[in-house]
Image (cartoon, rainbow, N blue to C red; front, side, top):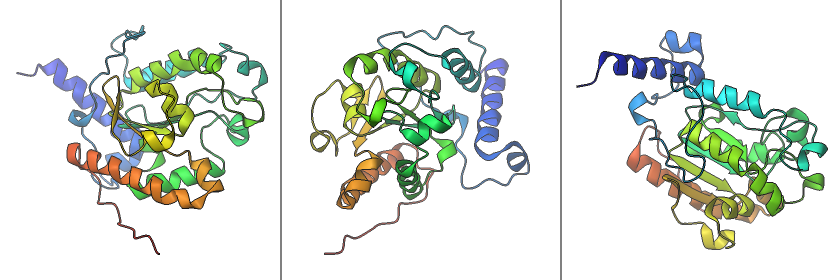
Length: 259
């Protein structure tokens, strides 16, 4: 039988989650866009093989833990990228996100604003989210490295390794049920693989208990619009798994490729 204190914790977490997603006033008035996720649908704690303990008081909520994480790492200088940045870009979105999207690193716009995926690639990502039935504030978006590499080059292995504990901590705090790797750098870093995107996509991988999907980075679609159809297939695969396990989203609109 569930104790009164445990039930109270679930109720408090549920209201905090809904308030964050839909706004305090909107939620309390009962005006909710679509069917909200319940506390019971939250993902289980991921079993991380490294740094598995969150060294914070256990009575803190996911939101408070994430805020504390951001405060602790806002001046991070783990690697040389810290000396080159304008702003660190730790991530943005819901602390209760079921889905966490991971890119490779901030670009020029992101470096200027301190937020991930706010440039042209960010607009593509938001269209992807909309097509999958999500809004930006109900997912979490971050990158493998948190500072912009000079000239938007790919981050090197040392930089990825330096940032790895930060990404792991974010995953530990948010406890997403699904991870979505955007591009080869993110996919190779998480899956410890040097395979191509073509070899990694169209499959359901696993990262410490979270089902993990791989697709092209949104910036790749700016260079080659024909990749949209492959990205679309990856989005459909994700929704098939999501719908079978959670099923709180309307069906994706089916699209047919014109010959």
